[in-house]
Length: 102
Image 1 (cartoon, rainbow, N blue to C red):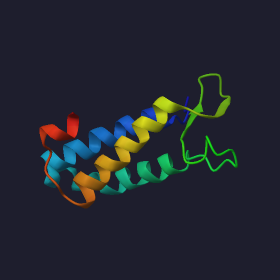
Image 2 (image 1 turned 45 degrees about the vertical axis):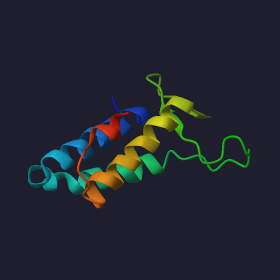
Image 3 (image 1 turned 90 degrees about the vertical axis):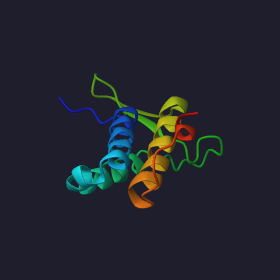
Image 4 (image 1 turned 180 degrees about the vertical axis):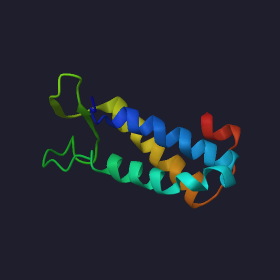
C-alpha cells in the first residue's frame, strides 16, 4: 500500500541530502530521485486562503487512505529542514558541519 506522507518523504530527502554531502560521487545516481522527492514535498504545501495555514505543509494520506487536509506543524518543520538540506548539500555542494544539526 502506498500512502503519501510529507513526514516520510522529508526524512528520505534529508537522508539523501546528507549522504550526498558525504559521498557525492556515490549519490549522483540518485539526484533525479531527490529532485522528484522535492517536487512531491512541494505538492504538500498549503495554499489556503486562511492566513495561519498558508505556506505550511499538509500531512498527507493516513493508513486508512483518507487524505488529511490540514496543516501539520511537525510535518512543516521536517519539510522545511529537508528542503534546506537539499539546497545546501546537493545544489550548493556545501560540506556538512556540526552546526547543521544544532
